[in-house]
Image (tube, rainbow, N blue to C red; front, top):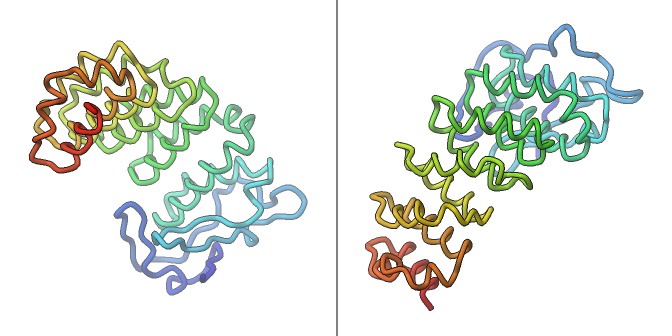
Length: 262
């Protein structure tokens, strides 16, 4: 696996793509913002930070930076540095998402900056990763960030937030927001909201989920079937609409429905 360092030439980073974000050419990678520290702890500097390209084609930090408690300000500065290529900023966002579970106090301490960045970034691919990173954030930071993102103007960000709520230990706090998401105009948002309601076993969402069994999008019907089964298997088994879906035109939906009525 090839290794790329901050400041390497364009040739070292060719063909990197993340979440359908493509980039090419341009000037060399800029250094971290001026107010960021040049040193990380006693042993790390910016030149030490290494990234490897994953099989999925995006950059991932492998340096011990993730274990350095003093790295938080520099990492956030790199994420917000618009002079960096998108692939590198996404790599730093991914590093931050993996850094927070190791240093929960830092995630809380820099929560305001984290949320401000999510709300102000024009690059949705970077914001998407920062939103998904909230799954391991402290409750205050996570719920504030996800509540905002669930109502963002971008459907991609709304879908990312709806999905992430279901992964957070205190996600039920946003149960009403998830239920609102079931009526979203975007298919991915409705599907993500249904999935999270199922994972969180929000019983009050049953009636709303039943209505989605007739949704025009197969992906939404599938998540509604699964969610109802998780929330109340007996209730789902006896639903006429669930039995009807055994003959759904989409084979995944039909198989999922058949599994729930056994």
